[in-house]
Length: 137
Image (cartoon, rainbow, N blue to C red):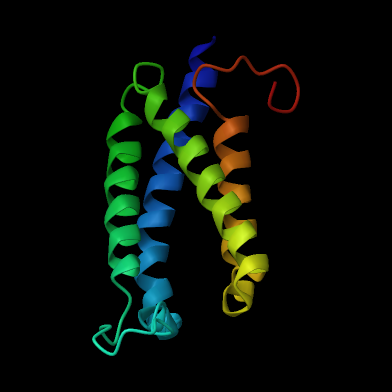
């Protein structure tokens, strides 16, 4: 692996980290309906906002901070990228299934699921441990 490959991986880690860290709060301002996720619950004591939203935000903030810090030594911190690929892939697959099982979750097919697959592809292509022979392999 060349120094240029590692520099590209470091740049990708910083970019994904900062872009995600900026998009999350901006997304909440642009799409305040996110606070209403889960209000379809049958419990009369259900809060007016979804606790899942804050759980997801906490997980993504932690991951993006680690991506930014890990960019200092991409090869030594490649497990952060592996986690990002696996966690985002599993998150997308769960949401994909839920969109067909729960009709009120169908909106995820148009934004969240494709965005998560794109994140996985970016992380896969510029993974720090991958030698670059052509496009991503």
